[in-house]
Image 1: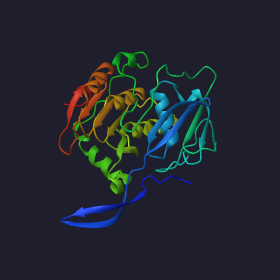
Image 2: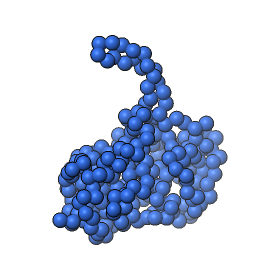
Image 3: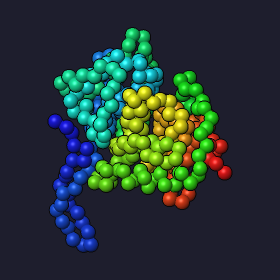
Image 4: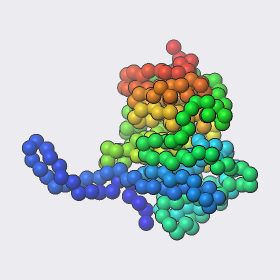
Length: 284
């Protein structure tokens, strides 16, 4: 049975001096057990849906895998196989929905392709990959981003509104973040929602990985909320040169963007934004 992404709850609502018993919807948050070659690797707190994308995007960001060719097969539970939000692409590997326990994904890699991280990366809805704490550690796995593209600054401000317009679950719960991939003209290509913005990014990147589109050298990534370090890391892993956030960036996010040559934008609004790193990609 498919898990609801916005389950109903009974609430007591107080408004203008009066109490009412009503029904409301909240954003679903459940654990996803991620295994590598049958051995448990991580537990991810996420909003159910697009879990195959989430698992592959996370493994790519952690350099457990480096390309879609590293994957031999994936076993996934029926609930986790729900790919709501759009037709799922046919993956270039064997996919089995045969795990009996719910909320599980087991990725089998080709011989010698995958590596188990030396540290734990338990991922909660508040922290993307807790444990990678230095920009220098990322430099061991990722190369600086290529130069370009250069975009018109007028492309950026409308992205925040386009994210909100497409947030189906946010409208019913008010509790979900979004990550949207846009082309250089500002056209939305894919959007995902989750209780964690880093999970939403993993789902976007995982979908593009399955489709064989990485690296995303001519794409823009826009995220709701702030731009944390973990979101920048995941964008770097996918080769995304421009990241725009509705909220503020953190100091480590700025340092990471500078280290890899990523254009980092914050406080994206209808008529303004700030550029914190690599401004050369925005035409002046």
